[in-house]
Image (cartoon, rainbow, N blue to C red; front, side, top):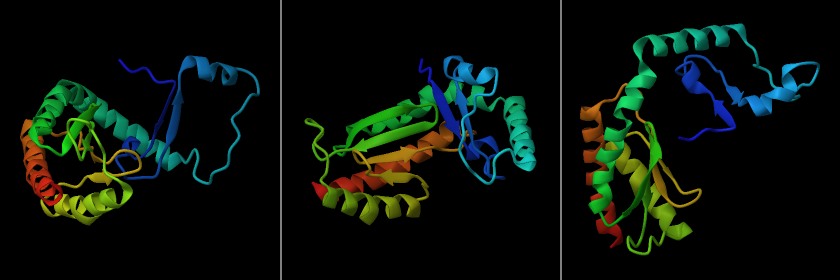
Amino acid sequence: GVVPDIITCGKGMTSGYFPMGAMIANERLYEPFRHGTASFLHGFTFGGHPAGAAVALANLNIMEREGTNEHVRANEAAFKATIEKLYDLPIVGDVRGAGYFLAIEIVKDKVTRETFNAEESEKLLRGFLSKALFENGLYCRADDRGDPVIQLAPPLICDQSHFDEIESILRTVLTEASSLIF
């Protein structure tokens, strides 16, 4: 049930084959621009590129034809449930997100949800987790702009076998990370 006022999107519109971005607004925000000469002025050099629009349209048609969104909706609960198995690890404080975009919050203390200080986050996320996850076959993002999290955004065609593999790699690496910290 999330209904946003604005959606920004980019690479996914073309599957990364061509630079493209868009802002999608709800009816209430769009209304002042619907008629007349009102405009949203900003500058850029690639807007409205016909090739980008053609690639995006073709890609979106393929995603619709192949039922990509339906596939994600049908499998998102299984993805989240599989990743939530990691709650038994002392370093995992929360699993949150929607669809195929999840975040695993990394904590120092599971009971209080105490997080790591800047130096500890740097050492844990960039000094260990990013490299270890990549070396174990999982390409994801370790992020400490707020609370330290591991961001997961697997390909939209993934199924349970992929979810199990992702969970296994995370379990191995996070277990090792826990032993380094605790």
